[in-house]
Image 1 (cartoon, rainbow, N blue to C red):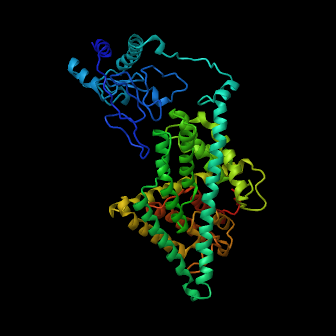
Image 2 (image 1 turned 180 degrees about the horizontal axis):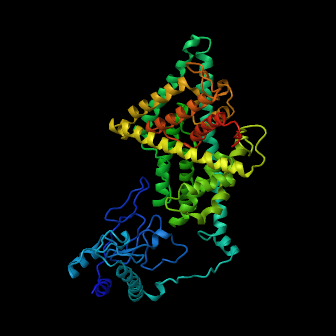
Image 3 (image 1 turned 60 degrees about the vertical axis):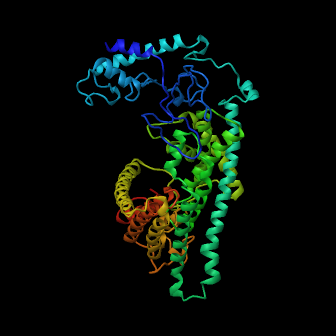
Amino acid sequence: MLLGDLLSLLTSTGTKVSDEEETDDTSCSTATNGTTNNQKALNSNGKSTGDDINQPRESACLSAADPATPVESTRSSVNGIDGYGTIAPPGNFVKHMESVSNLPPIFPVDGPGFFPDYDYDMVGTLNRTHSILRMQHLEEESPKSCIKPTLRKTHLSFWEDAMNFTEGSIPQSIVIALCIGTVCGVAAFLYYSILFAALEFIWHTLPELYIIGKWSENLYVLWIPIVGLTMALLTGLTVVFLGEPGDLAYTIKCVHEKAYISMNHVVPMVCASMFSILGGGSLGPEAPLVAICAALGGFVSRRVFKQRSRNVVRKHTLMGMAGALAAFFGSPLGGSLFALEVNSRFGIEYFEHTVEAIFSGEVCLVVFRALSGLPIRSIWIIAEPTLASANPLDVLTGAFIGLLGAGVAACFSSLHFKVMDVFGNMGLLVNSRAVYRGLLGGSVIVLLGMLIPHTMFWGEFEFQTIATMAPAANLEFIRPTSGLIGFEMDSGWKALIVGIAKIIAISFTVAGGYRGGFIFPFFAAGAAFGRALTSVFPGIPVQL
């Protein structure tokens, strides 16, 4: 009886659109009624939403195997039956099944045990049968010329693709990667130039002009809370008046749902991240650069090259993200692959864009390093001589250190959830109270910085001092470098203190609503814990 009901359902008319078309560039929202913006629906006019990033599709063609169509666009919901051949809970199908068979709705996707009374083998058979019947139904209802083949031969050569600038082709990808890499390289250079000019002015020039020699030496340390709390205030005001800047999680969500990041998030992100870093917060510029360059990549794709395919636009957005991390790390391969890795929420995703992302990262790195006058090399020298080779014991030792690092990460996770609960219970996690949130987080950051100056800033430049246990006078930005108590990291237990204080600073920086990336801050904390470990086990090479 169920099979007959399925057949009668497939031949019924009056299909209803069950998801909403994306209409603006300002949010990555999720549609209701059990579907998402990435799920496509056929309406009564035979149209489908989603293949084109801005316009609805004008055909009811079955395009599941069309290589030019993004994966998301192959899903459709016809009367509540999912386009992949599984029976979905929402929609008219559930009502139909309840009315004709007096059975509760079938939810095979939850697996055996969710509804123990069902014969799940029969459900699987029904699903496979439904897929066949749906194909036959579409063949009968659609013109023969509208059914696309499951395999399609490439008709154009490389030269023809280049002459026609074919969407998604290798020649087009090369040209757009050059453009996006160049644009993102210039953007990264401008961001870094402004950031370091501001750091130099606030933490070096102003103290030399108005503090050193004019204040009592015991009062020099007050410059840390003056700057830190001022920047915390400005960070909160940015969120209140310029809008939500977003963060790395928001960027990844937009890549999955919209394939691009709106340009109206760029200015709030630039301002919020600048103030966060200038105030000594333990978040770095890598995440803001990723969001900024991702927005620029999508903008170049959609506005300059007029791309409309969601999958093609997503590829260009990932090119921008890869360029940002390649420029930041100084490594086009590692940075580009990391940009793809952070977007993989369920296994390995978007691997088909790897080559183009790495190429764009190469271009961005060369442009950024050329403009900034920096060499393309390692940014740190942990110990001399460097570790030229390793033996099996070193590998096992590295694995043991990795397990210890995982334990530290688990402890940080537990701490951070408790800190976020405190901020949440105080009602500070809403944007309207961003100023109070920033001041509370900034107060903890400032206190730690006054006691242990090594915890200030994002760690890229502090890492060298921590990893080599050099004097605090070598710290790059903070003034005075001695802090309130003249702290020096000159022993194993002090290195442990620095590591613990750094992860506390990271947690309160994030909880305080600061914007930035936590890659380098955790590197700095890890370096401190590593030096503490080598003091307990001197036989472990420092380079490990």
